[in-house]
Amino acid sequence: MSPPNKIRPAKRFIQSSAKCADSGKLYGECILANYTGMTKDRCANEFNKFKACVAKQLGKPF
Amino acid sequence: MNRIAKRFLATSAESIQQTQYNVFDRGAKLKHRSLIPRSNPSLSRKKDYLKDDVAIKTIERLGFITRPMDKVLDFGSHNGSFLKNLCITEDIPQQGIDQADVEMLKQLNKDKESIRGKIKELVMFDSSEALLNRDIDEEYAKVFPGKVTRVVGDEERFNHEVLKENEYDAVISNLSLHWINNLPQTLANINKVLKPDGLFMGTLYGGDTLYELRTSLQLAELERRGGISPRVSPLVRVNDIGNLLNRAGFGMLTIDAQDIVVGGFPDIISLCEDLQIMGEQNAVLSRSGYLPKDVLLAANEIYKSLHGEVHDGEVTLPATFNVIFMIGWKKSEDQPKPLERGTGQVNLKDIL
Image 1 (tube, chains in turn orange, blue):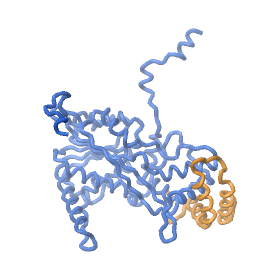
Image 2 (cartoon, one colour):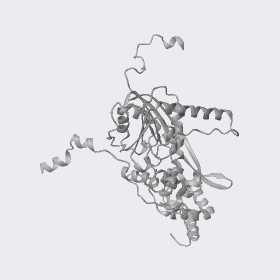
Image 3 (cartoon, rainbow over the protein chains, first blue to last red):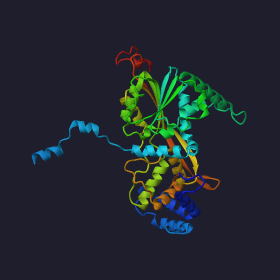
Image 4 (spheres, rainbow over the protein chains, first blue to last red):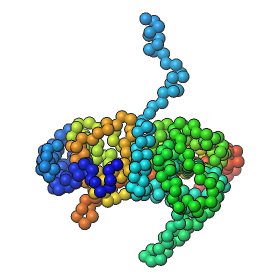
């Protein structure tokens, strides 16, 4: 276990996604509207926009 | 040719008995539960909140039991939250608290004292040595007048020498039975170590526990990958508990369930970290062991949209823990029983 004040990679990753709250919210709303009949890539457009924003925050693609 | 066919088609009864369908990886679970208590005990202590809460509820319930409790087994005791809460007297604040709450705290302190006095020997049994001995030097245990024994052993194999038949007046077990593969057998074993008319009081995480996390991960995997994998344990439903306890030989059952909702997690990772520190991360045998970043990102947003709570403009995530409380008594000759069929003297028709 890392010392408490060192941020773990997963935590840093999710924290940088918080700066993309708007596009993330659009993705979440798309899922919310479609959750009864979910299929693969149903919200791909929204997710790709969100992912691009997070990658920009991180400074690297993932 | 004939012989080969025989070998493939026949299954001896003996081998059927030995094959047990395992869901949980007990070895991995043992590592999960031991890691943080060993490497960072103070961090581990910070995440005792659920165990402490349930231990207090158990004490409140034990307060109603008038039977002797000379020898008690705490089965799957973790660090000993039961002992700790039994020994620590609750502070009663002088202000800002209403009278009913003051009375409740006073009653709780009274219950703690009386139960402490009743237990002559407490045996704490757990598979993780690091967790069991984490608080062995704590000062609070000094107020406990009886003898405390800490025993390391496998809960599922149930082969330790302290687990003798007809030995215990009461067995309690808090929040650890949900990692047992063969729950019917383990409950039957607990029944065996009880004295006749002995009390079993247990709690475990039930069906709707972490449903927010489960559904978010499922939707995220479905949308990103097109399929789902087991991320959250399968859990017992409250409807099945009665049947399970009956099969294990318990009578006069009392079963109820309670939702404990822990709110305020900023994101899905914080919740998973808490679970990890508690030693409650995924240990399903068929788990994938890896969560793609795409799915993680998606699940976090879905969690926020579907279940998020808004406080002062910030979205926080709640996590529900559905705790099932069960009380059962080992059957005995001198227990009150229902009268036999057809022995009623009064016709209900005359009354209704």
